[in-house]
Length: 309
Image 1 (cartoon, rainbow, N blue to C red):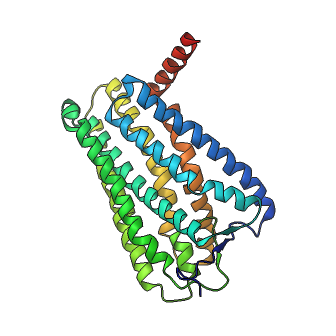
Image 2 (cartoon, one colour):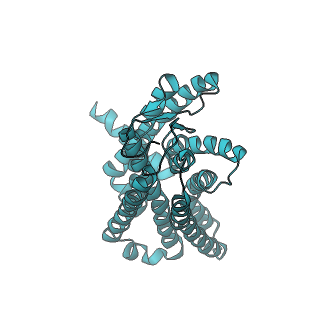
Image 3 (cartoon, one colour):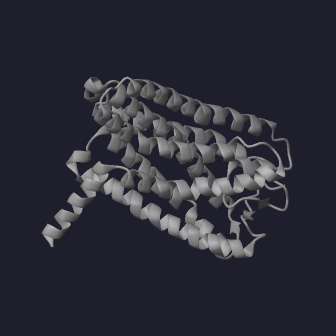
């Protein structure tokens, strides 16, 4: 058995049964990571430097971008090494990876819910938006998201790595994740499976339900609008966030709420890869390509750079 008292490390199998696919994935993952770094850094810079983006929406968006930068950096360098060469990871490395992955993944679930609330207030209570979404409340909501993510990881990470693992130490995944580590255990995993189910309901199903309730209220408010211009503005305000939520939660549900069978496990590995690598690189693209304010802020930033030169 391998547990926390015997930290000899693990083997991350990933897609080792398909060596040709691993070479392709190396290029895809590296490209996605570079897009994530550039896109999310750009959003943070624009949100900080452009006074017209000093609003609750862009405050939360910059939090999301910073989260995605930390999230991907916590495992993609290790993943690239594993795709190209040795597939080992130390026990400490697995602990750190799992802790950060759980913490930031949970934080993103809550942060997307907070952003949905922000869009609800903007569309359904526009006259009171500045009063309700004042800077202090925004900071408090962001802090709650980060603290809850940290608390979830503090509870679940030690409980998962305390399991008695099988001697082969082969994790059938590309990173240290709770479902994969539970499958690696040769002991009783009832408590861990219950813990995973409860945390999935609290941090995945419940936030998603709140987001759906927010968008139902937004849809009712939009349907009462007679002005075509107001329609367009309301839809433009919410469309980017709704796309990000759809992509994020579809992949999370496919990974953490999948049935127990070999086909679902293999499919979940691909969804997990998309959740971990794809969504952080798509988020800045969605918000920049579909958001006129971000595009104008980028042009203003380029204009200042040209003027300075």
